[in-house]
Image 1 (cartoon, rainbow, N blue to C red):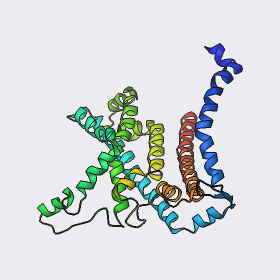
Image 2: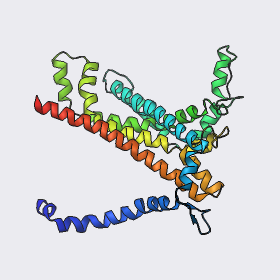
Image 3: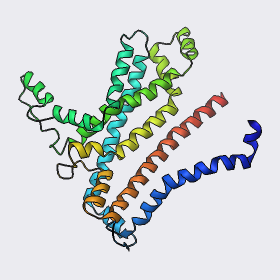
Image 4: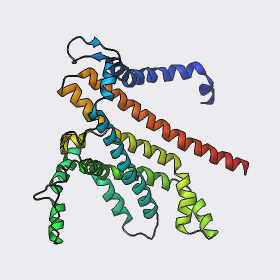
Length: 300
């Protein structure tokens, strides 16, 4: 095995087909999207090269900035409800004194296996202003407070972000919980012998050792927030007005409803750049900190 790994020709022969296949599947569509973003094209006829006109128009488009802002809001909500709450639940459920741990873990994962359509139909009923559960709860509590949750342009985007987080919180929880359980218990037992409380062990041992997992979870949550589409289509169709547009929804609308395929490619390119920038920042921040920690340990 070691002899084969040292053979560069063998490495090239075995990896090249996969790299070529991945390049064709992943990079060619992205490259085509970037090229088409410089064209005035309806997707059917021959396009006209317009240079940076689409980008100039996009940066002057109020819908683009609203979509960009909505993506940031959804990403922030997903980080809090999926990653931070998922980490907190992991720390709580790793305590053997907590009862019904298996039931709670299973319950958290149930929404993940449901169809997005089913989840959106469920929450659409719960949020219904006339017969919805939430307004009925206010009514039972004797409050006259009512809200048309999905038609309120100030809160609709937060509702959509919450529905997405509710469905995929279990997915992030499983990633973090599995990683936490793979950490040897020797460290926690040694800390317990030294007199550390459970939460002191969590903050000084468990969370630092989950750093790589947290980085992955952050990337999933933030890029998922930027790419959100299905919940907007099913719950609000981007409305009221353009209050719940995301860059993904804006791309779909430009390309397939307005027949401005080149303009849609422009917003898609900026969505890709936004995701790559976020991944780069997360890797730089957490990667540098990891290197500093490693340097500090080596120096000590």
